View: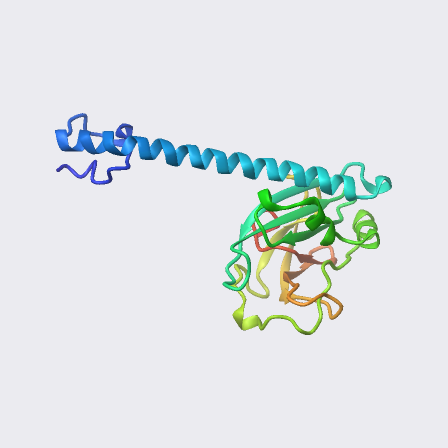
Length: 222
């Protein structure tokens, strides 16, 4: 064996040696139907995910009051949860306003499983949305003192004092601002149980904000 086809699932085009044994050829042939089935399943899952994203974007836009709806950007993505007690995959929804205000909410389910009712049950109040639209900090979701022990939470990527850049506006290129991490697992006493923000950040312009998710689309290394 020359080592190029030791994985029977490897497509033939990946081998750099044009010669192979009859056994290798039979293995490729035998596993081809399985590969086609797997690829089809991946395509179906991806299509369902994208359709879920589209539905959620429409529902979020419709749920925002008309007077502050113009110019918003809604970003939906699935994120993996490292906590064994939570859903393996959460759906994170970021809402960004032309003022630079932004906020985020999360649902403990895959995008394809999100219903309009579940979304609206976790949706920010009109007062919170109006504050975001003005570019103000408004905490969502709230949290109380029955929060999960910090030691049981997944490890975060950035340490206190580390310099980062944060998404603060709708533009994917210019909508970022530099700052540094002030706190991990930031919360307010009024937030509901088991609700938290991974980071509180002080921006270079003096504003204090929170990052509602530990993902590159929201916060990344400076």
